[in-house]
Image (tube, rainbow over all chains, first blue to last red; front, side):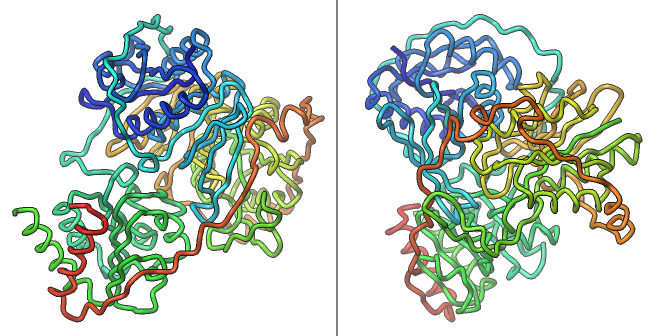
Length: 318
Length: 258
């Protein structure tokens, strides 16, 4: 009996980190609920890795690039076949696109962007940040199946040491003539995105002008992190919205968050205060960002950030 | 060409959230606004109307206070407004989507616009659910939109890249920040809006049962504030090199990030 289905996204031949996290929590839920963990993918290359994370079977649909319609139809076929209690999707762009669509087709509920999950009393119980992390809601999904999208970085990916998942082919869904993917535009220098990054280095108005974001980029690059930004800098046009952390940007919870020249408006704090380790650099000792920082440094970011970048480079060279 | 824009009214993003009874937020003294992403959706629809003619109908499901949000949208350039009365706070995303889909059926439309998420509940579910119920294609998290004859071309934001998609009409579009620069209401717009009557309907008027919409599928069992962070160490960064060294120590030893 399959109790849990996880949508396993593959990029460059490997499972996405967010999908590995979803598989891990899916495996734990399957153990509690009593049943198997299985995965849904469009690339059979995922079988070995999915198996290591505990998936017994990998259902493979003959599809390539993601578009909503055919993926929904393929997942629906799989659900009809295995009748799961739980469907998990990582909260990636595609996971967030597919979850509501399959839920409406199955007439079932979704808990979005959850950071805790448990199976209790025959129901899926989830915790999710609401009001951009200003509050946490615990919700119960009473429909069968119950669907959840997992917040990237909120769950730890742990292998279970299983062998390759058995590959089961799903029939090709009818093609969708309503939507066509024309082109995917990838920037020349591929940047880490804040949604999935383990480390984020963010800049705020304290940078004084757009050009000074180079200080943030240099540190992010040296440390292997993504570039974040406050709403004020995005609204001022210093940096693209994709980098915005906070209520009208992305809510993030990386392992390490470094904020330089970010004063800490309530909506920024809401978006990042669940980060595991927070370092703030600001010249104003009263800046609200210090209330959530584990390490606060009162000083001039124009001196400290470049010094830190150099120190990180040296440390990495050793 | 007719557009429908679905609007959620949400607590002001600057507001401090208080909990009422362990299950919902305390609305006392809370300022409500049009959900920020819905502003981009509305602006996109108004631009379609300006280029191609037709109506922009705004639709919202909620208690009486949502009329204020609809009024604001009329002042900015929407031409019609429909209020579905009900305790939307007790409905899950699918309940809201079923309500909106039922309401939209009687409003002429070629395009349906939503914000990519309602700020606050942060579900990012309702737009695609409406698309599924009505059998329409969807393009989510749209940062650029061109409306052609019977089809749209839209740019969708994904991790570190952008997709360009073509969809047939009618279609659902969920708006991302950056899709456009929303306009403010003009005085003329505010005056004109006062002359437009907001149509109201109940769930029963739409042929819906409350038992299908409210307290179904996903229910909130607890709502809590996050634990107060006490703030950690604060050090003087007057000596940049020394400060950098201390930060590096923290990153290595406590965050274990290098």
